[in-house]
Every structure is written in structure tokens, then in C-alpha cells.
Amino acid sequence: MAIEIGLNLEFIRCEDKSFAEGVARAAQLGYRYVEPLVHDGRELLSEGGYYHSFSMDNDPHEMKDILAANGVAASGLSVHSPLMRPEISVPYIEKGIRYAAAIGAPVVNTDEGIRPVWLEDDECFQVMRYTLKKVLQVAERWGVAVAIEPHQSITKRTEGLMRIATLVESPFLKINYDTGNAFLGGEDPYQGLRTVLPLLAHIHAKDISFQQAEAEKGKVTGTPVGCACGEGVIDWAKVIGILREGNWSGVLSVECGTPAQAAASLANLNAMLAGTPARPPA
Image 1 (tube, rainbow, N blue to C red):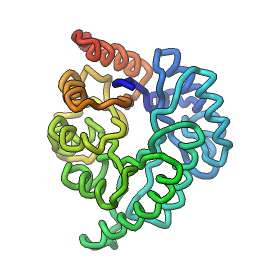
Image 2: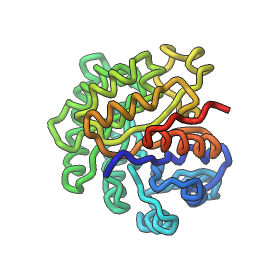
Image 3: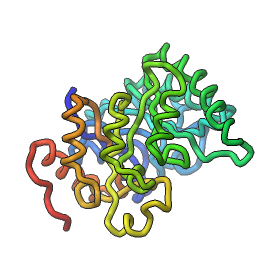
Image 4: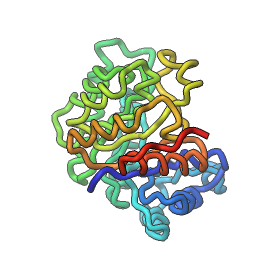
């Protein structure tokens, strides 16, 4: 597997469409990998077909059939749950791991979550280590990696991200690097990418518009979606160069806000992978 391009299904949220519609649209745009979002239990919007999240109470083969019918595979599963709340995250992530294995996704992506106010500094990492030790037992049995994403107060810094991703010694504890979140958190995303490369399992290819960069850099720990890749502040030729220098193979999962941005991202990233310049912003 070389460097491939996938699409996080957040791109369809702006149209209030279902999981199945999001997968179909991604395939129509030319993507061959998608990153589904899952949830526990039942909720009105996705049940009614107005939201792209997929309940893990459904048979995983329902999701697998939808992916197969559209000729796409899952690059990973979005299973974000607060590592510092083990009563929530342990059963949720364990369920997500088993679901990922059933649909053929190699990794589940998560982050530390918002820090509970009652946890002291020295307690945060102890609690997260407990959570990770527990869920990694399941991950190792099922052959699915657990990847930590830079997204909150600790992981906004590469040092904090690496500390969490090495709390437990396991070949299945990895990193899902988010270029846009790292940038907004105040990090150099290229140096950060080089640092995490030995643990890198998946990438959120998120670009940040120049306007958002000016307004929010250093003031937030992340953002749900970015602009079209190649139309913001991230140098994708540099990102791809770092990955190739490290002989990395895997999926760049585009995180953007609209189908139009998804189409532009695919064209721009394909151009970068082919060694030709991305088209200029519209």
C-alpha cells in the first residue's frame, strides 16, 4: 500500500444526509477510502437519515455491505471517547475495536477528551494509562490499532501527544496525526509529523483557511473540519515529502466541510502525489 487518499464522512454533515448517502457521494467523487463515525445506542438524526454517524447497535455487516456496494473500504473508524473517563471510554472503544475488525478497518481513532476538572495533573496520565492498558488487550486480540489524535489540551503539543501514545508498551498503540489541529494548537505540523512518524497509523488531512488561521491559531486545540486541502496554510507537498522520506504508507483521510471541498481536496492531493502543482484556490 502506498500513500492513498480517503475521506472522513464529516464532509456530508452540511447536507444533513445519512451514512449511506455519505458513502455513495464519496465514491461518486472518486474516493476509495472513507472514515466512518460510529456511536452507541440510538439517536433521532441518524435514525431518520439526517446524520452520517452509524450506530454500533447495528450489525457491522450492514456497514460492510454499504461500503462494498460503493466500492470503498474503511481507512479507520472514528471512535472518539475521553480517555480520562474510563467508565465511558473503555466499553466504547472496546466495542469500536470489535466493530472495526468486523468491517476490515485497521485502526480506531480517538483522543484524550476534555480533561475532567476533578483530575489533578499527576492523575491524568495514570487514568489514561489504565484506559489504554484495558482497551489494548482487546486491540491486540482483534489486530486493530488504537490511534491517538492531537485534539485537546494535552495533545495539542507534540510532546503531550507522544507521552500519551507511549503510556503503554504495545505495537497497537499508534497516532492519528491531524495536520490542521496541530497547526491551530500552535505547533509546527511538519516537525510534529516527523516526530510522530514511527508511530503513525493514519492521518487526518486537514487544511486550515488563511482566515481561520489568522483568527484562531494558538487559541484553540482543534477544529471539526478544515477547508479544501491545497487551499489553506498547510504545505501538502512538504507533508507528502516527509511521509515518503520515512517510507510511510497509509491513508490521508481528508477532513473538510462540504462536498465541493472534498472534490477539490482529492484533485489537489492527487496532483501533489503525482508531483504536479495543486490548482490555485478559486
